[in-house]
Figure 1: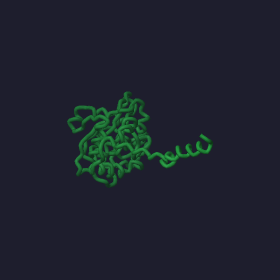
Figure 2: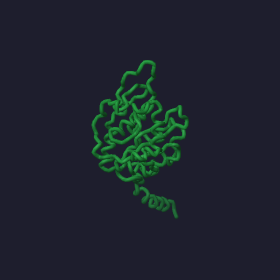
Figure 3: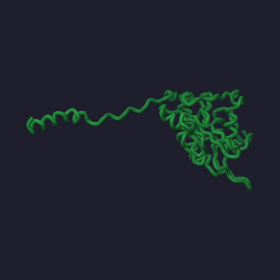
Figure 4: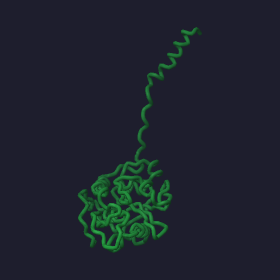
Length: 236
């Protein structure tokens, strides 16, 4: 073959590649646990309107139900975070039983809640333990689902958060856990379980194989609203 023919042949060989263009982007992975239904979307809206990013602030004394700041009693230091108070407030608004002030002290309350959720009393109150996929599926059906970790050291705080209804895919769910809403040393409207529990060694491991546990409770749809967080009612 002469040089001219080689050039033509090379050009013909490239033509299909040039016409093909760039590869199409990969399709997003499908949600693992169904699409959030109407009740789940209402519950997600309640979380979105809870004011968690500006209430239940760390290193502030707060009313547990509303998250509003209040004066600190003389001689006491404000708590470093209010994860348990925030979760108790959400449960109270939904008519779901969960340990809360003033019946239980706020200090180390997340440990109390996590241990109570594993008890027969919690089962009698309608709570049920859930696996990872089941927990997200129930959240997407409008159940109240909590991620809870009791510290192995009773003198150190645990952590607790609300699982958000979402379109998370199975790979992300397995690696980083559900999307959650939490108060803590930093409050988040939406953060992965892995990041939200990162300050608690051993709590989250892929596949929920660490010390963190998931619990679900059915919710009466009539109790779900989207308004502002109620004003404090510390006697509840």
